[in-house]
Length: 64
Ligand code: SF4
Image (tube, rainbow, N blue to C red; front, side, top):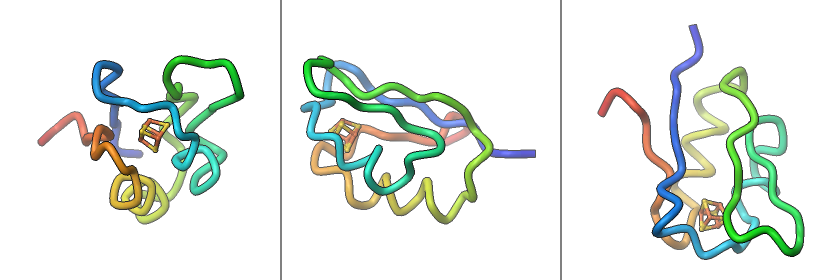
């Protein structure tokens, strides 16, 4: 089962990097205040990469 994760909306700076890194599970378009999680079915490694590259470090696994 895919691990679930979330974006801390208070910390997100709306840069869109997560959606560029992992388009299948993140959505960001110009004008949006924060990125959105669209699903949990992406490879964990890809989600981890989005977490690592997020400049605000605001993407977190739900079970940690
Ligand atoms: S990479 Fe991080 S700061 Fe940038 S839009 Fe995604 S969640 Fe927000």
